[in-house]
Length: 113
Image (tube, rainbow, N blue to C red; front, side, top):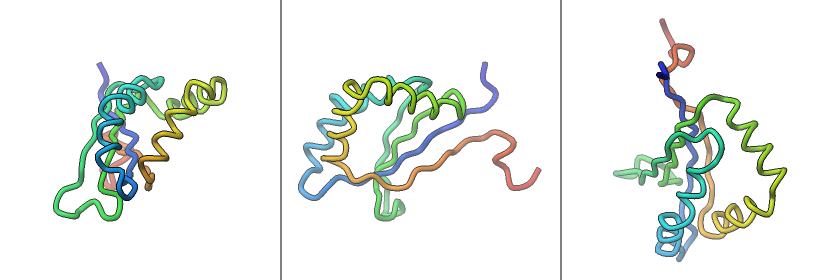
C-alpha cells in the first residue's frame, strides 16, 4: 500500500470555438489514451469553478507512481512517436496547454514539520 500519493497536474483551456469538440474528444479518446501512459494510476479532469483557475480553467490530475514516471513518458514517446504523436497533436489542436505542477501529500512537500 502506498503511504503517499503524487499527482502530475496539467492545466489547459479549450481553443476558441473548440469547447464542444474538445470535450467530446477528451471523453472518448483523450482521457483513455492519457490514462494509459506508463505509471499513471488514475486520471481525473476538473473544470475550475468561480473563476479560480485563472486563464487555464481545466485541470488534469494524473496520479503517478513516482517522479520517474516522467522519464518513462519521455522514453516511450521518443521510442514510438507514431503512437503518441497523433494524440498530442489532436490535444494541441483542441486545447492550449498551461502550466503544470507536481502535487502530493508526501512529507517533503510540507513547508514545516
